[in-house]
Amino acid sequence: MTEGSQTVLLVSDRPLFHEIGYAFPDEVTVSFAGDALEAMQLMSDTTPSVVVMDIRTGNAGGFGLSREMAANERLREIPRFVLLERRQDSWLAQQAGASSYRVMPITDDQIVEEALLLASKAVVTH
Image 1 (cartoon, rainbow, N blue to C red):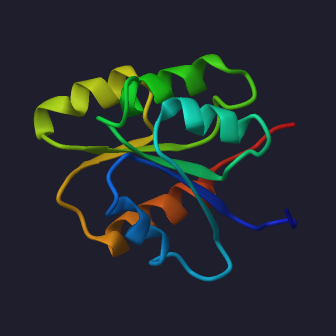
Image 2 (cartoon, helix red, strand yellow):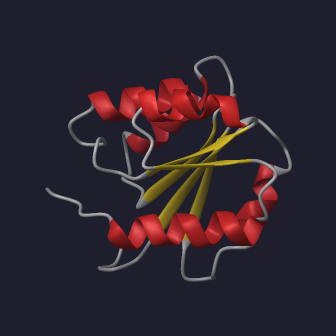
């Protein structure tokens, strides 16, 4: 990974979620995980600039993934953008330590804009 490059990890078990990857600029590296376990496995090898996650993905969902990341010293500073199915779930996102959250439906362009904004504000310490 080159200095200043941005990487995005998209986490969802929804097949349409993969289409969001095409909305990112070419210079952004986008990876996909189908659930929290797969996302944590991917992050054992790489550190994304931002993680965009569906709150209801797989068994642990975005809520569990965000909490796992918060508990992990290496991953806790990575911004977490959580996509919610309903406004009432906003407290779940807050409890999980989400950096940002939005209620779906949301356009691909809005997801890209928020993810890149969070990635640009991230301060990664080594």
